[in-house]
Length: 374
Image 1 (cartoon, rainbow, N blue to C red):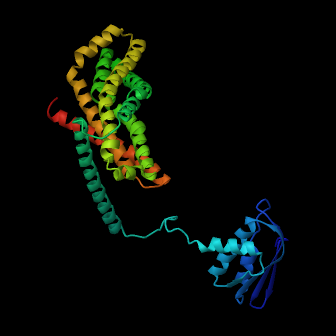
Image 2 (image 1 turned 120 degrees about the vertical axis):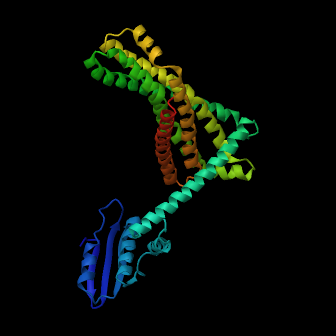
């Protein structure tokens, strides 16, 4: 045992004599020998701590005594520490007086397979009802926003327009150009075998117009703007700013949600048009450098093979995606818990929910346009 601790066993009594200085800057005292003595001597009923030879001490002594107290409680032993310094006794009493937080650790409950399925179904149903309720309130708030009756700050709307529009051009440019180059490169490798290199322009133009421009822009905005909305609103929930708005008689849906939704819905079609242009330019770079096509032939082929109806479908999708991204971000933020962990979870859930909704609704619109032969 360490020179700081001396153990003496006398019948049903274990005497723990503490000596020397106890400091957090010194190596921690191993309580393994105490545990071994208690395991070997089952007749021990009481532990007496003698601190008359103690020198200087700090929280290291209290930590050791706290662990010794838990050990005595676990083995149902009596612990006597009356000879310790009065300050150490008071600090130990404070440390043992606070019960363990019920939410600090997860409770592992063993449910059967059927129970887990039932609980999951009930949770999904309740979340669906909450989302439908939030959707109705959002539509009502947006209706008042369009009519000019909503209560909001115009400075906030301008900031959200700036953040969702011009501030996103950099990442949209990079991703769109790379997507166009990838489409052109993959098409060039295959079409060049058949002497149909000219149709790379058809592939790039049609893919960007109908699918890739709107979808990739929406995914970028889900990870950038949707996550930001969830984090902002979740932080406002933590700081009780949302409750303050309700107390002042201001609708949080009008003041917080409506401007964010309006900004994203307005900017998404514009970003999609820009993404179309960048993607076509990226495909043109590959076509000109790898396939020896001229820019005039490339753009002429796109204008002949990709009519405006395909770009219109992409713009319609972009409006739908803008609504979905704004809804997912605002919904997760407004329903966030009141802790830092809950805000992080809400941010992650907003991105996941936004991307899933984008893929699902893109599939539905694609199926609909195929059935209608558009």
